[in-house]
Length: 543
Ligand code: VG1
Ligand code: CO
Image 1 (cartoon, rainbow, N blue to C red):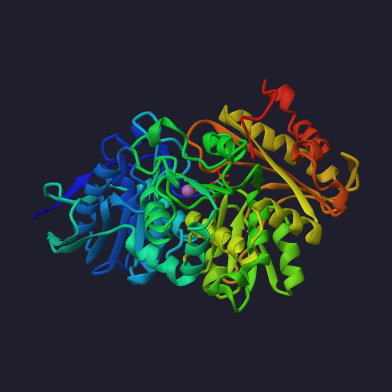
Image 2: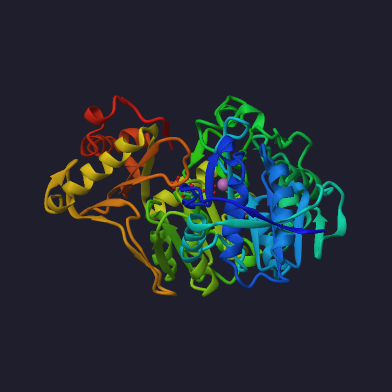
């Protein structure tokens, strides 16, 4: 089969965001658009010859076409072998698992994660390195630079291959292995958790509901909860992956996973509910009439980690992204272990995990994970919660409220203003930046401000620095107000405002967070000049 050199011209908009390149499907369908980006990835990996690449996606619209294109290009670019999940499917945590288990050089994940799918919605592509984690900024910057000067790409003159049967074959000189996307991941989970204890829990009176939102976790959740752990059939709902996620938004929060929330807040609610996102790396945890904030989830799991076999020796340290609440820090201090604060995005945890500095890490955006892989892991979080429930014999609500009594409650809420005109989003950020110098020393929302800055992170392992990672107001009582623009949207700008304060008084820990945080919420809107710069009276999504 002949290698073809195809001439092309750069696209100006191929800068990877928080988690890879995300665009409307129609953008990816432009001639050469996907190919240019894939060639830019390959160009950023000069030592790829003969190496193994893992390839799969969350099954959204355009997944199958992209797999064929990437296979042809990988063969023409000298890769030795590509491992593809059957049907072109792999969850993000499964790609991370397989990269590590097979000592692959890297992986390509096709997903726009929690963004909607279908011909009029989003597609995405992301490169992970040999540790199984998202490429660090050094590499994504190299990819971006290559995309700006690209003149041509290499592909193979070959027909589509069959990606629906397990097995191995040659494509040009490159081996292709089609494998079960679920098996290796499930084996890893069985090594981490006590499946016998979980089986006893799920075969008892305990009832759970897992909503896969018609995204990638369906097949994984069926295998784990119903096949391996013996939960009744029907425990997993919306378990068949669909190219448009059934028209929904595969984002596990109270707004987009409303049907699950409705079940858990109903009279005859099950004991436990959980959902994941498009590519399977996020998790939402619900108890009966109870919602666990992701920041609390990280803290609670850290406090109970030794209930899980893989973490029986204790944790080395904990990391959280900057906007995530400080609840996990308090647990780390109580445990006498280190805690770290990184910028938003899982790629910043990679060095800390590789260096053995941390065992658990998490983000407020429904991301939780550990050193078992280098991605956040939705089903891992669900299994971790079930382990804590099996160990304590308590309900989700009791576990969390007891945690608050012991460590204090970090009231937390994030307000998102989605799809603002891009220039308005930038104007809001500039408006706040202009106020930063004069804010320290002032008393606002009834609290003294001690620091107001633009977060800069220096990686403690490799010394690299990342600037402009979010605007922070830090108050004397530990409260925080944070502003940043999303790096994953595909339409205009999304402003995220994060609000947090610690309530140690156990008598005051049962309030609605929107009420408990109302002064900070008002201050956030005022500082952003929300009324005058936008006509938005309320956020699009509250989490
Ligand atoms: C969002 C979240 C961030 C997460 C990222 C990728 O980024 O805030 O915490 O790491 O999505 O998650 P942003 O830049 O839009 O705030 V996933 O599950 O969409 O890959
Ligand atoms: Co995701």
